[in-house]
Amino acid sequence: MGTEKRRYYGAVEAGGTKFVCAIGDETGRLLVEERFPTTDPVNTLAHMLSTLHRLAAGFGPLSAVGLGSFGPVELRREAPRYGQILDTPKPGWSSTDIAGALAREFRVPVGFDTDVNGAALAEHRWGSSQNVEDLVYITIGTGIGGGAIVGGHLVHGLMHPEIGHLYPRKHPRDAEFRGVCPFHGDCLEGLASGPAIIARCGASFEELPPDHPRWEIEADYLAQLCASLVLTLSPRRIVLGGGVMNQTRLLPMIRPRLQHWLGGYLRRDELSRDIDAFVVPPRLGAQAGILGALALALQAL
Amino acid sequence: MGTEKRRYYGAVEAGGTKFVCAIGDETGRLLVEERFPTTDPVNTLAHMLSTLHRLAAGFGPLSAVGLGSFGPVELRREAPRYGQILDTPKPGWSSTDIAGALAREFRVPVGFDTDVNGAALAEHRWGSSQNVEDLVYITIGTGIGGGAIVGGHLVHGLMHPEIGHLYPRKHPRDAEFRGVCPFHGDCLEGLASGPAIIARCGASFEELPPDHPRWEIEADYLAQLCASLVLTLSPRRIVLGGGVMNQTRLLPMIRPRLQHWLGGYLRRDELSRDIDAFVVPPRLGAQAGILGALALALQAL
Image 1: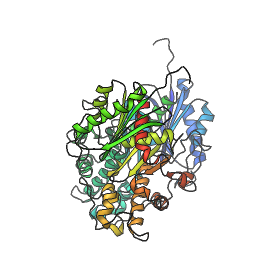
Image 2 (image 1 turned 90 degrees about the vertical axis):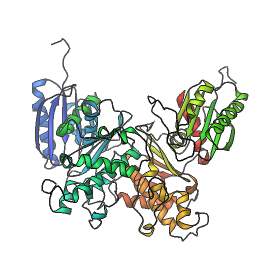
Image 3 (image 1 turned 180 degrees about the horizontal axis):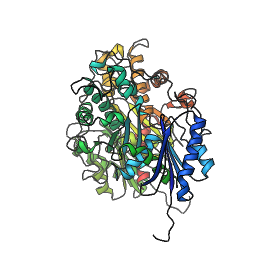
Image 4 (image 1 turned 30 degrees about the horizontal axis):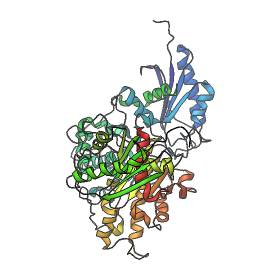
């Protein structure tokens, strides 16, 4: 070992159903990790702080903490509510000052962003999108969310990307389905998330036969999402993750539908010959979230 | 006058129907300006170079030149075709090395981007969006295009934004209309551009009565576009310009439809109480294009 002291970073993935706490280093290695279910905010935040303290005990003081959270969250540093979870359908969690709790407890820089922006950063730093300065990371699971990097920087404006609530055109075989999004009905999340598939088909993909029409409909909706991203954020890579994408037969069905929706307008090898390298699975798999929090900690320092 | 020498910049707005050449300074003032119709590329580029030389003669050597062009264009500096107009439906213009022609002739830095990215930059620098680091500028006219600034930087990835080719949901009163886009039929440009309005109604907005259903349909499509931008690029301001938006009654019809499509999901004063300051007309009006070219020249230096 050299004389230089090693640095350690705290990482928290704050999900709607579970929290993950971990200690990692600047190479993207997680040294210890622990997870627990999300309950009410008071108990969950207390659990988060004590878990992180306990995990950190073996490594000395943390240099920074990173937090990737379910949203919507307040990311504008100038806003009075910076660091809070905003109005969320999740009972009791609106206005929870989650990043503030970490900053007050650990008194180190706190990197704070959405879980999906964090995952985009992790895939950029250690995963599928190294040396790619413009990318979108999408997760399709209980909900649909996306993080985006443009010119090497995470996208923060009025809010952060909320791509799950774009409206796709309805598939002709799905015309009667009204969708499950409490805000929008048949937006993407309402039509193509895990709960939407179950509401529509009475079963998840695990249980549906390979010739069920739902596969084709799902691929079409996700391809429309990819097309909308190509036309707005202009990514050089799209990473599709989350529970629904664990069905590996979906990805090769999405790519030709993306080409269909773009209609040959954008002549790019990446969108034709090389499309297999344009729409890809995450290389970090299920660890993209917690590694995203670690990447946010590194960025905060 | 001080002892410091004043700097002058060349600016070219390359449009599908006309070119504008001008000389300006760093304050956004245009000192001379001249326009001529777009014909074939050889004659048009020769005309562009000689016009710019002639206009510049009274001011001494130019410090830089800026070019905002119709597209699609190659903006990736590492690409062999950097500076060219790519495959365009405009006859003869595909693969025209328009930025290269300026660089070889004037031997000064050339700032090159789409006309709409340039216009976004001009509105950011001198117009409606000063001190706004995240914005989209949209023009609705012969076509529909948009430029975007995220975190203070123009969006360039695989391409540049091509927001005119997003697909809105069809308005129920427009269900039968197949649209006019040669690539996509009923994408936004196919449904809501100036030529689309004429194809659908047999008349332009200048000739349609105020109670014609087209106003409501048009506002709905443009509101869907704004909603898609809010959910992807997360702008802090949207600037709506172009010939169709000269119909000033459209803008106040668009704002409530934007709120409709967002469905109350994003709780932001900018999207509710203050929406009149969120979706705005360009302050530079018809000069946004040529001032965009000037802004690109300043940025190149």
